[in-house]
Image (cartoon, rainbow, N blue to C red; front, side):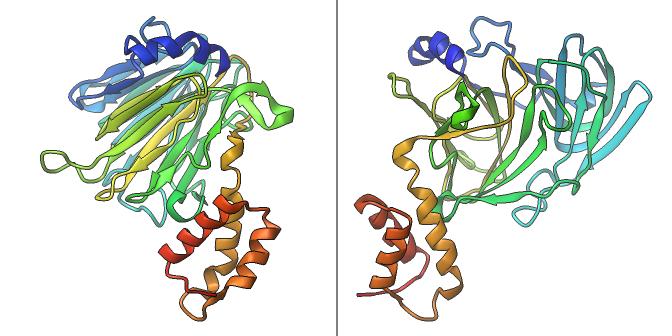
Length: 337
C-alpha cells in the first residue's frame, strides 16, 4: 500500500518496526495490531487462538474478521448461525492434490462465540459496510494452480469483497519444496484499477510440514522495493509477516513444502488487482510455452527452430529465451539444434 509503505519503510529498514514475528505456539495472541505504533500496518490486524484455552467471545464492533483453522476442530455461534468444522491432520493432510481449507466470516457489529481444539487464526480490518456471517466449508472452493516450473504454486481464495466480505480478501498458498510464489514479482501499492493495480496491505502466516530436528523446515520471505527497502526473513513454522507494500516473494526450502495463510485489506472496498514488475512480465510467456510443450515431454526433441518461433510469438528477449531453455532442460525436455 503506497501510504503505508512510505510511512513504514524507514522503520522496517532499521528494524524498529515489527514486520516479522514468530508465534511460539503456546498461547493465544494478537500478533499484529494496527493500533500498535511498532506494527507497519494501518488497517490490518492478525492473531491466533489456541482453542483449548476457550471458549472465546468476540465483538466485532466496526471491524470484520475472517477466521481460518490451521488444525483441529471448531464450533462457531454468531447470532442465530451455528458453524462447525475440522481440519484433521492440519493443512498438509490432503496437499498438494487438494485443499482442506475452510473459513468463517464475522461481519460488523456481530458477536461470535468460538470453542474447540487446535489452532485458529484470524485476520481483521475495518468494515466498509454490513454483510451477514458466512461459512466456507472444506471442498466448497477449489484450489487453482498458478505459475509454472520453479514458480508453480497452488492457491485457494476463501473470502473476497465480491462475495463474503466488505474489505478483507483471504486465502492460502501452497509452495512445493524449492519453489517460489509471489512470482512474477508483483505489487499492489497504488489505487489504479484501470492499470490493473489495487492499493492493499497484506499479512502472511507461514506453516511448515516438517518441523523436526534442530532446524526443521525453512523458507525465505523477501520484502523489497525500488526505494531502498531490501529485507530477507528466515522462516520456520508459525512465522507472520506484515507487508505494507513492495514486492514480497517466498521460496520454500529444498527439504520441505510450505503453506501460508494470507489476507489483504485497504481503506475502501477493492478487488484484488496485482501489477507485475515490468522486467519480470516475460515469465508469463515462458509459462505459456511450457504449457504448450508439456504434452510432448520425453517423447521427441523440441526443435530449436520451433522454440525460436514460439519465443517470438511471446515476444521474449534474450534473457527470457535463456530462462525458457533452462526451464525446459530442468523439466526433462530435449532441444534439437
